Image (tube, rainbow, N blue to C red; front, top):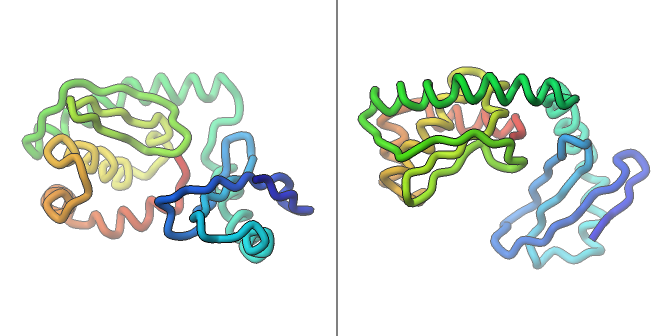
Length: 178
């Protein structure tokens, strides 16, 4: 479903059975997306979008400050990420006694990172735009997934062992878009 707003333009609505609430995002192109639970009616969504206009504008402003605008900026960011992120991941892995199979850098639009069951860690090149402590939090988070492929209490205990301030870092990270 697509909602047309006079100020925001096109807002794409995606239904998600696992979603508990509304989640707003903005693509590098500037297009807005809302992820919504199945139980919210189309009529209600059409009324909620204008009510959350300030949230959309804040997201647009945040993404406008951080994101690369042209292919050469993106290429530079990718080059820096491919040099820095694997080295930093290796340093943190040694510091906290983790092991992983390999690391790859990508430009995913919705995730900062991921880890497969085979120990392949994928990192978003957008991590290069984050403050150091938030970048390290994401790297530690993915390293902890090499031991716990879920978000169980044991996983979060492992994250806390490596990053005692992870709760604040996790909260701060919500102010940024991949």
